[in-house]
Amino acid sequence: MNNSIPRVPRPANEPILGFAPGSPEKAALKAELARIRETKWDIPLYIGGKEIRTGRTAPLIRPDAKGEVLGQYHLAGEAEVQMAISAAKAAKAEWEAQPWEERAAVFLRMAELVTGKYRMALDAACMLGQSKTPYQAEIDAVCEVADFFRFNPVYMEEIYSNQPESGKAEWNRLAFRPLDGFVYAVTPFNFTSIAANLATAPAMMGNTVVWKPASSSILSNWILVKIYEEAGLPPGVINFVPGPGSIITKGVLASPDFAGLHFTGSTAVFQSLWRQIAEGLSRYKSYPRIVGETGGKDFIFADPSADVDALLVACLRGSMEYQGQKCSAASRLYVPKSLAPSFLPRLAAEMGKIPQGEITDFRNFMGAVIDEAAFDGIAAYLERAKKSPKAKILAGGGCDKSKGFYIQPTLIQAEDPHYETMEEELFGPVLTAYVYDDSDMDAAYSLVDSTSPYALTGAVWARDRRAITRGLAALRNAAGNLYVNDKPTGAVVGKQPFGGARASGTNDKAGSMLNLLRWASAGAIKENLAPPVAWSYPHMGEA
Ligand code: NAD
Image 1: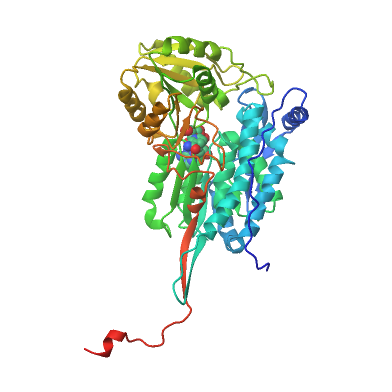
Image 2: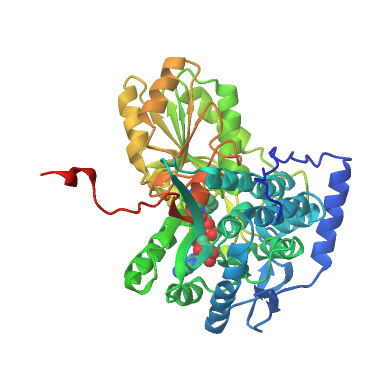
């Protein structure tokens, strides 16, 4: 027993390596890419600290070179889901009884493994498995993962420090218990950091977790599992269960001990999970916590006073990095009539210069989209746009899946502000621009606010300060994360807590105390230091 009130080390965001020509990190990453490609991966489930190979497997395919199979991973079925639930339940008592600083230390150790020993492995696995360029892999699989592991313990300390007042001769305390049961984490393919955070944030707060990763990010996610083990996370605290979402969900939601869902992915899947939970409500010991971050239709709104040179860069980076597969990626652009004739042709010309190809060639700015289903879905939008009188393709529009799932960076101009690519989430490298009439700014803001059911991110571009004030007020409910004169992507843990409202999610802000609070159930304890010894009251002395 150390009899102290510990303070978590105050973190800084992990610096991003650049992989410039001739740099030592570039040589190290190239070597690691080769090592990972030479390895025949056979990735098991990981339940109760044990590797489980079911013999039912699926291949690990490189999206940008689809002929290259990196290996295989094993799929869970009903029996393994039950094993994972049992393992999570069995590990709970000991894990939640650990002093919180001992739990925090496990995650701080993980951050060092992520940024040290496993840095290149995470970068290379994220590049090969998820088709990210070196920079995109580094900001995700290394920097943001480490930031979650270093900042969340600080938020945990803040939560636990939050205590009520005490009156005379009493001591009031708040206990922040983990939820009464286990947490189900369902993670998306597009951010390794989200896969890390959704399972570890509840675990840090003393919960145990059944984690269903996305089928197209298994390689980087498996490296996380090995890091958790090496950092000393006890068996059963996080159970890694890849496999068909519907089967795993059915088993998990049937358990009375299901206590919370930590989800990131598409709006449709989240809504279907919420409905299933609602139907099972009478089964559960407590009302499950539901936290979900979902789709977006993120905007860039250019005021006539916008700095067009910087706006151009924001449009390109904000919409095309990681092939537009960020939930925060700009996918609708509003340009005033006064700027459009000069701005849109420039934007189209620059888009045409973007180098795209295999991510192992560091000169590329873009790789492929994640898989064939994603490719086919986006290609269908492009085909319809080519034929529609309401849309004009200004750049790109081509696609090719012969070697990998490549969609050209595409700029569409929509004549109708409600054209489908202005409203629906494509999750690909497609930016649709609409030219608005700047003689009626109120109508323009109202259009941005009401066009899409989502409210995740957005950016207002203006040099005129009055326009910024007006834009921020008019669009305050149109995004959970608003940017001024910046691209709408790239939120950083500890700096821009992330999450959207409306159809984009429950807005429980990953990378902040708000998210961690959802994984605790407060218990109030009142201790009377001088309990009364008489039961009558003074007014009872006379009539
Ligand atoms: P997805 O919804 O297809 O999949 C997310 C997860 O749900 C995966 O693990 C998947 O296997 C699982 N799943 C799918 N069907 C299921 C079912 N019936 N039952 C249980 N689980 C099921 O999403 P994705 O393609 O992996 O990710 C892209 C989506 O995620 C986009 O819509 C994007 O906007 C969103 N996203 C949102 C945020 C955010 O913070 N708001 C961040 C990243 C991604």
